[in-house]
Length: 397
Image (cartoon, rainbow, N blue to C red; front, side, top):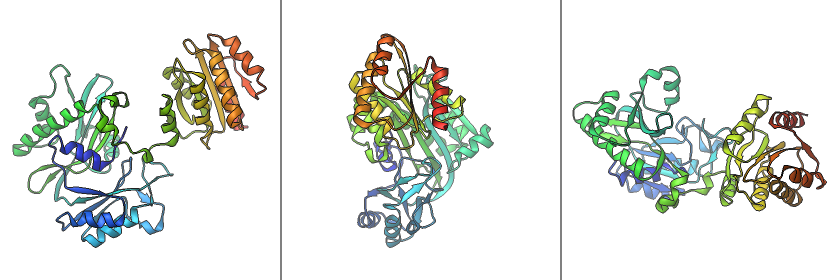
């Protein structure tokens, strides 16, 4: 689960991280009021969407102007005008794709006197099963370019889970960021606060880009992006309250109601599979034969007919889907349950695209019989390779 920048900064501030003063606004009037509460003479107006690269992004609407989603205002009136231009407009960045995201709120923040821009993030390194600090002296909007062109400028420092964070870890980070003297002391303290926040709130990602050094010699969190481990949200009702459903794919929201593991993708072949590993393999083989999956969907091992029907309806609600591949290996999940669920969904929403079904495992013959006698226009498949070839052929005509 992701949250907005203004929410992330409020959370980090509660752990004593140095952040700028700012206020969220939903309309131009609120933006003006927010700007008046800040001293100036420089205000920063930031579009709030769940995507990075806002500063280099562009708006689809002409009224929003050519500047990106992060702008500098030098008066309260100018801050109001910028907010008014952004609100309701669609911001396109590298992370949103060409569809972009509509800006429904802005963040008005006090300007900062920047001397240096640094990069910092915390994440769980799956290779080592440890929390890692990733840092670079090359902070700013194009960290992806730094990673691609000069990877030696990016440093990764792991934290031993048995020992936890220590001043030694902070000093290593300070050295990687070329910080000394009082800035080194600030770095050690700040890294400890960020590590505590990361662990206590079960974060999956905490990214600060940029972390700045001000001209007065202070470390300051200028931007913040936080994602949480969905599996740990039950422990954090305060975090769940921060969820903004308007920033999420409606299909993913619907899937969460049925405890389905669903992620929307950009392809045109819908997939319904049981088991994350088999789902990944299914997507891989679709790509192998020259097509792209429209989603990741794991219905789980103990899915009911209701869940299967819901999953099928979610897939068919995606206008990009030109064909559907159902790939089930029945263990706990029985093939006849899948068959009954699919039939129930088709009767309700109809079937306007090719459907390939591959069933194997528990009650497979019963499942195949149910589908065969249903009268549905289904293309049967013997194995995964056969299924992938058939659905790609059906979609590509």
